[in-house]
Image 1 (cartoon, rainbow, N blue to C red):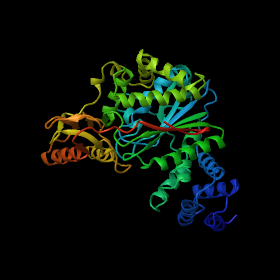
Image 2: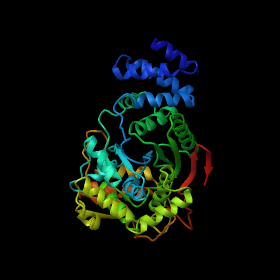
Image 3: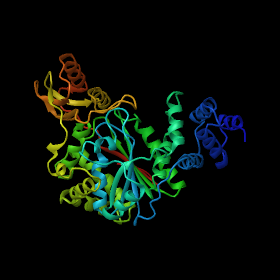
Length: 443
């Protein structure tokens, strides 16, 4: 095969074979295909797309480019979950113990964050002593013994995706549905999942800004799942305002604990129940979604899921006392209230702007080399649809730096993210659609 001919083939909107896609991915991973040729190939895909078969072949080629988890020794159907990212997205910390409490094994490999706040692994490190790295046998044995483990991804998992994503980032080919879908699904398949539930965010604080594009992405990933034998369900969810109330690593861990105590924010609680119910159905522990929803709701409110989180933390060396006493989490010394300047009703919260503010406070990374401050962030005191009086708190900043100019800048950025109107304001739906092998079901 000649690389230039495969570039030309995709440029002319022809379908590539499995062998041709394998050749491109293997050659690029090994360094035999240079960046400039891979850039041309990615740009051809950007303009001409890929068929479901091509996208599945690309996904598998990237999944096979490095280490793959072998979870066959763990009894039961292993169901993984992935979120396309957002602001205040704490779901994994709640879902992992909740789904495990329902009898579905959760062998979760998560990443660190780049952007607004830390990833799941960064958040777990806010729990003193928690080990995010386990040996392969220890990882498998823990899931077999207690039903759940959450660790960092292998350094050599999907190296082709890491390399290709870095190239796409600097060649204006990020916004391609086949390339996004194969990037996400290659990591899930390499992680060893039997079935996958996707939380596809849409809106201001999400990667996919429009509902139409979010549904297209969900459909592409569900099709990949079908092509490679992994049943996949995608839930399209609202990210026009932050999920829950906390933005920041230790703050989100506290919120996750409160949610598992049955007193978390309504939107975060609802979303976790919906996602968990789909995971339980795919895991074979309920015959229908409605049955699964009743089951996980009970587990959330009767303390079983909270007990499973405590068991998870203890198994991975963390301080279990934090689950009973979240005030033991690392905390920032300065709490700065952000007050409303006028009366009104919150009609919009710029989730992306608040995410950037949280990153500037130190809760996230602008570059891979940045160190995260696990204690800082913010807690929203008002959400869309809430009425506000002048001088009432919109949000509270948690800071390790109280230098006046910095504090004023962070306060102003936060206040500007809230739009107030006279009269009432409606909140957008939390869940827009469910995408499965049966098609798109609008909610």
